[in-house]
Image (cartoon, rainbow, N blue to C red; front, side, top):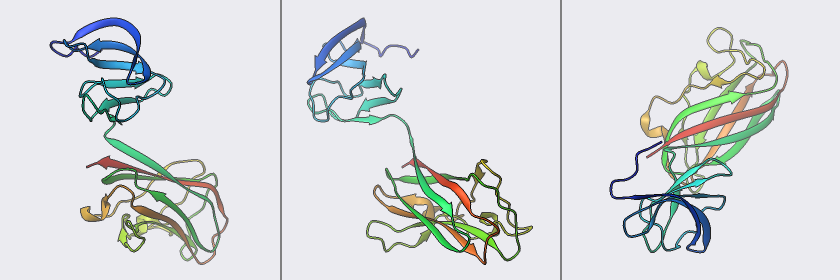
Length: 214
C-alpha cells in the first residue's frame, strides 16, 4: 500500500456525497478535501470538491483514475499510460482484402501489434496473407504504414511465418518512428490481404493494437 501523502489525513472510510456522487473517502487533505476515494460510479466531470491529484478506484472494474482537473471542476482520467484497441477482422477470406477499422483512443505511439485467429494457415510461396495497419488520419486521407512492409508480416514460405491456431502472433512494427505516432481520433485501417488463393479461411481473427500515451 502506498504511503499517505505528506500532510494528508487518513480516514477509516466514510461514505459521503461529493459533487453529487456517493463515494467512500479513504484519505483527505488538511482542508478536508478528498485525496483518495473509491466506489462504483466515477465522479462526474466538472464536479467540485475533489482535490487536484485525487485518485478514484472503480471497485466494479479495478480501474484507477486521477483528477487532472481542478478542485472546483474535476476531470478523472485513467492512470494507465497505455491504451489498447482490438480490430475484429472476423473471417479472413481466401481471396482479396479483409479489413477492419478502429479509432486511436488517445494521442500516443504504437508499441505492440498482436494477431490471433482460430484456424491455422500454413506457409505458401504464392498464396499467402500480408498484414498491414494504415493510419488514415482524421479525415481518411492519411497513408502512414504502421507495420513493416517486410515478409515478417506475411505467411510466405521461408521468409514469413505460418499462422498457428488460437495463438498470438507479434506483428513487426514500422522502423520509422514517425509512422507509429497517432493523434486521438485517428482512423486506422487494419488489413489482411490475400495474395493468390489461401488454402483455407482464418476465422475469429483479431488484431490488438497497444499505444503508449505521448
